[in-house]
Image (tube, rainbow, N blue to C red; front, side, top):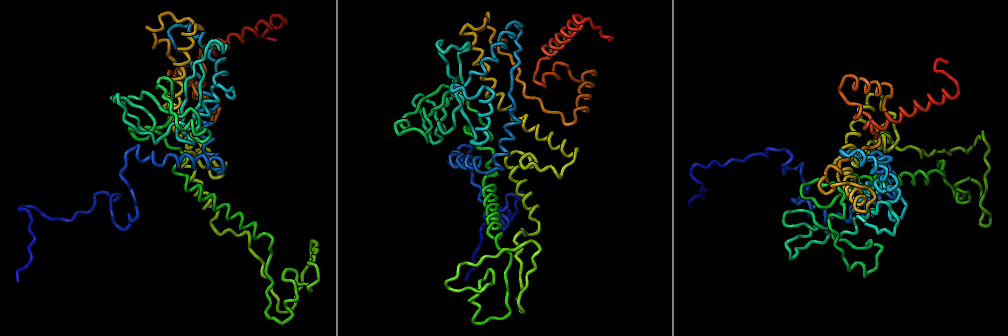
Length: 478
């Protein structure tokens, strides 16, 4: 009987090689690790509606999630992100700056918020729902607006992520957004009303909004990603589980609270059933429930063989506080925030750790401000506002079409961060300016102002004081 043979190619060496990366192992430690290969849109769009609804529900009902998102919005937007107009035309800068502030109070169609309130609402929607759309609404002269343009904040539900279609003109709709052959975003398809508030007729009609009239505010985490995911996706399940655990623990304590202990007897007899198990008093079938009035300092006595076992209802187990802290650390981290900001617990940090922690947090917030909020919203709104002001005749801009870029030079300033250590921080800034490490204009701009405006205000204040002293006949020496 011949033996079976294994044929291999001449010169080939058969070896068994371990995975070069531990993270790619298929061994016991990786059992159950499901990591599907999905593109940026297929991975998100199939789950986007569920993620969005759960994130909103968590924001409504979970105090930790609400606190984390609110802290991030407050720090990202604050009281507003304001423009400093920097065209080479000084008169134009002054004139358009005077138009900007009154317009911010009229930017919302319903008048419920000013522009900076709308900005906070948009950022909150991005962090909670993953994205938000802002539509340009041009207004006729009959509206009486000096700059006839308003902004409509639209929730992402208006744009169906399930809408995918190849158009006859060669364009392609991906998750409700239309792109041309070169991959440029050209339009968005949306329901005129919110799908959960509209009637059936509205759900059968989609309108096409040109990209020049819409802002899509979201964070594209992966190249090619066309829709945004909520900030708190990594914390959703943990926050829900922890919230249920907290509720269960609270209910357990509430249920145990009325019971002080259990009276144990070492003997039984036929008459035990005639005694109330709570008070130990004799009862009869027709007797009402007995009442017990215990005064402070009362000493209870029992019969021989009776033993009172007190309930330890307040004991939550050793390490409960550490367990809570660890869970809230994970929830806060998944929500892009800090444990201390979310919980208000500052007991475990000192001045140095606070400075390092806040500096890192501010850097993350500043990244979102610059890459998302200012780039996607503020700059686009700035173009819309300037165009409307010039085209409506509210402001003169000779050669606007030829000098478009110059007229639209702006610098957006966020609300300044409060000093961690005011004396040290201000002294450091003064030294930087004195030693030419930073300009006065840049230092003042960080506070949200223009240096020339601050200097002019100071000169005006000094002149006013001098005039008042002169009128009163008081000299500086006095």
